[in-house]
Length: 255
Image 1 (cartoon, rainbow, N blue to C red):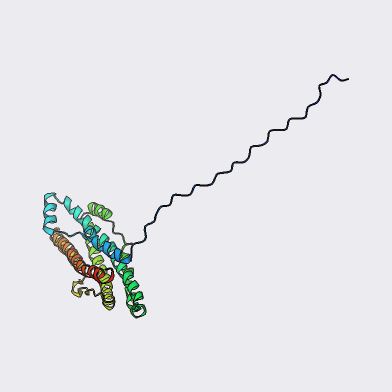
Image 2: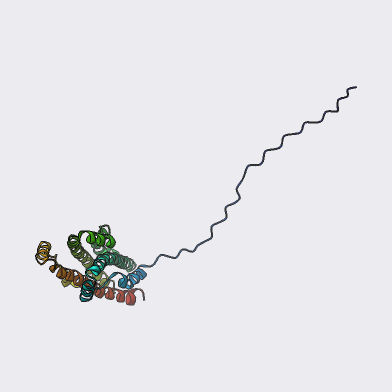
């Protein structure tokens, strides 16, 4: 007999671990999404925001502080002139767009959509003009720095740009306001038409630059006065029309 121990069955190799299987992904917590604002609410919000965008200058206060600070305050004035032009345009786009959307909804609900469609189509190109202005280079901080580095040259350039912007903006929004006044009146929610006398012509830029150079900069004070007061007047004309729109929306549409 053999002295060898009895053979034992071979030990099977350890089994490979099961591949990793991720567990079920927990569901994301449900976050309520607020409903979009209605056109009427957008009109009200844009109307209330005018104190944030439409900066009103007091020329003599600004002039006095500029003298007391040896011209330093004048750069803050320049910053505010550029900022208010930019922010006012953005706010007006929102208000006029909301007022147009609200009027279209009302026209559809009253069965007047086809009748008023030509007026809405006439609004579209003027809205495009206002939106195009938001793409132009009008950063108030950058223009203040440019003016600081270039002296009077920067002031000349920005005064010309601001005057041109105001004319383009006013003609476009005046046309929109006129169409909307007609539309809202037809809808039974009358809005007074805009004041056509508010439209202004461009400054004589060459003449003003020459006058500023000949007076060693003194005429630039008068030029700044015009930029300030014409902007102030434009805002107040806008406010009168906006008040009529807001009152009409409140009394006849969103009551």
